[in-house]
Length: 112
Image (cartoon, rainbow, N blue to C red; front, top):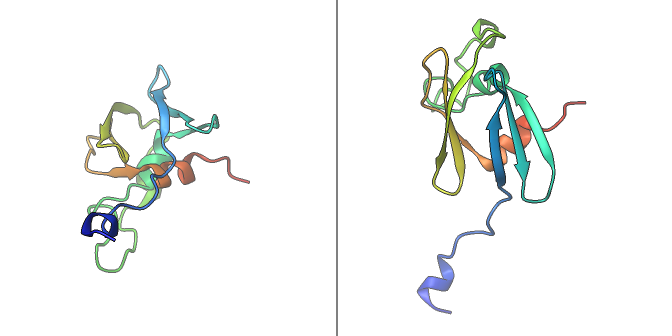
């Protein structure tokens, strides 16, 4: 086994093939490679932001008060991050969260 065989990354995670926001920016809709369509609100995405400003880096405790994120929050921009994630700019100016595909799948799945 060569050095390169030992450092190969794990199997590529499922990713979205399409990402779009609603016309008003209140919702994110994703079409996944396996054909599943999921969606969630901009508010929910912002409440679950994984960045260091929203989650303590040492304890993993959420520091963002989710109740302070208004339902009227909008997504103003969506950007790919490499082949592994999306980042968002929200109408409150927040833009530091990187949302890996696995997290987006969890956040956009129907709750029930």
